Image 1 (tube, rainbow, N blue to C red):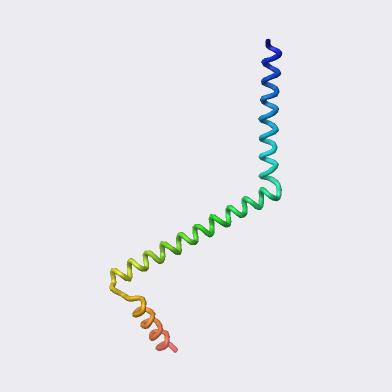
Image 2 (tube, helix red, strand yellow):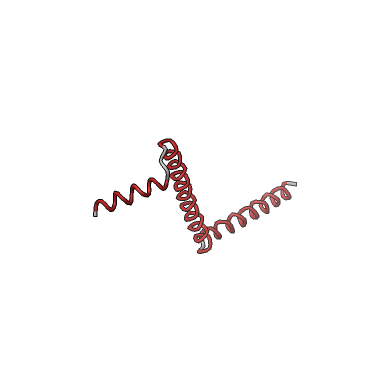
Length: 85
């Protein structure tokens, strides 16, 4: 009975070790590195998009609160820039 228990335990440990080894080998190889870099760049792009969206939303809120129209703002900026030339 002890022999069967230890045989089953050894087989289970062997299966777990082989699966873990396969996972580690997949993450440390070139494909795993490419996936990791791809995920990292995607997260940077998502973060930048979230910043842009938040900035545009806040700008719209400020324009609404100040009563500034986008066309007026562009006209005043262009006249101000023309005055500096």
